[in-house]
Image 1: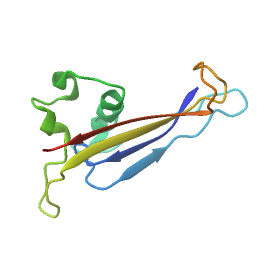
Image 2: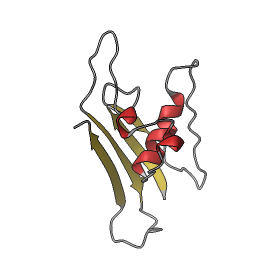
Image 3: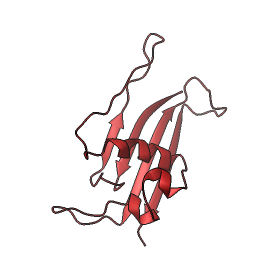
Image 4: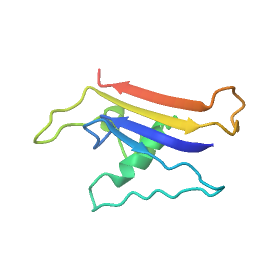
Length: 113
């Protein structure tokens, strides 16, 4: 089982829908994905999105104080969003999860109102 992709929309600094696709294991070897960028560019928001979609309830662990803190709050060029969503797709072709499907999709959505 491996992380196939993650789609982030309206979550923290992700004002536009962003999809990160990960390289599958090849020849029995796992791939490595690295997120790099300057301070303040939102690198840690990727790991926060993964924690959140997996069900993290404690906002302190997501570096927030209230649930609205995970929804994009606006910028000079774009207004605030009314919703945050994260969709994570896992490849289950090795049947590690005891279900009949080759893909697991885990999603979470939060509306401002």
